[in-house]
Length: 463
Image 1: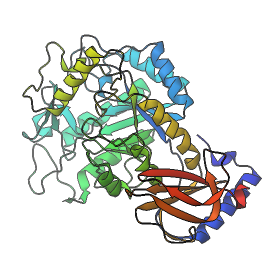
Image 2 (image 1 turned 90 degrees about the vertical axis):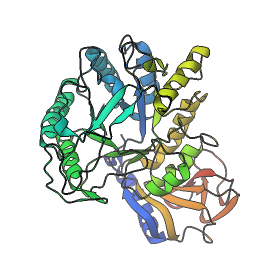
Image 3 (image 1 turned 30 degrees about the horizontal axis):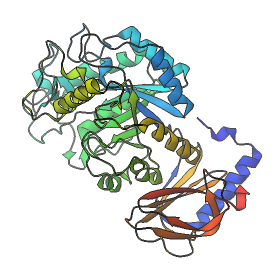
Image 4 (image 1 turned 135 degrees about the horizontal axis):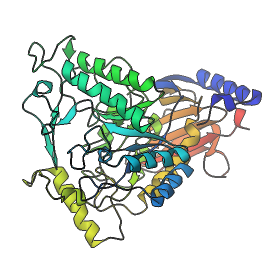
């Protein structure tokens, strides 16, 4: 990670002069944010199929993939639930690796490549058929029943659930030495005045503020931070947690979302750092550039879906009870992936639950190329001015449908996004040039429909 400490006297002088210009020029924006401790490149890495005849193995091909990601600036790897044994098929459990040595090998490989690793856990989901399950933890109805799992929503207000969960999360951190946790929260709010099981309703519960979940997420955040770790949270859809306290470092949004435009508008004001993962298992894009058009202007960068190809075998394991009524989206999706994989073993492959079927040729290479463009904008100690509403940057008001954001350090990068279906002309007061080209500088910028342009200011401290 680039540090503010890598600036010498001249670097600090240029940064401060640029910030003086930006502060005088920008009068109003959606958010002003000092970028620190940000890992923009993140990948969810499919370790292998779960459940299947044999759990995943890790070999040199995994190391080569990790090296490739790292070479393009990916700094964080998260592994999904296949690392554990949620169905107790291989002698482990929800908080224990089904292949501990393989998992440790993978984490060591990632660390050797300079990347951090987050491991999947859940502060709410737990298999109702597990021998450890306690009915006091969750309401008797409303389980998440999909593919092979029957997950109860364990209450954050249950003292016995907390006593079971928290020591096991600590053990995951201490035993496998990841760099943090990815929490798929599995939350159902307690009903005020109507405790279930052994719930203690100690807090006010409202739609905009969940007292019990804020308290539990705060405890999890604290135990991870005591070890210097990172917390990523997933609340489903385009949702943020109903909390006031800081309970995560990264928020993953996008699962189940079919309209990327609506998601952008909902999440653009969320606290940094947001990691969108638009759900291509359910929705379609006009092209892959749309993922970046809707995220980069708001200090967001999409989660890369990668690792081993998904083969769909997880939907056909022996001695596993599946939801097989024809109405389960994930059962149908994984079986479609399996059918395509068998018919087209050469690809294009799908790489995760939220990937399209069939996969998209060159999608990972395209993603990493955009990451190469994004990283210079978000170096440590950059100040980002997002969705600028009032400024002296332009010769005339921005056209309808165009959003501008500015990223300032020793250089000043202007990001222009045209969300309209027609071309738009933007006239800047200062000279800029396309950030990834050697073109001559200019002040007039023609934006094609639904496109993103990254410019670098030519004059002042960039000369």
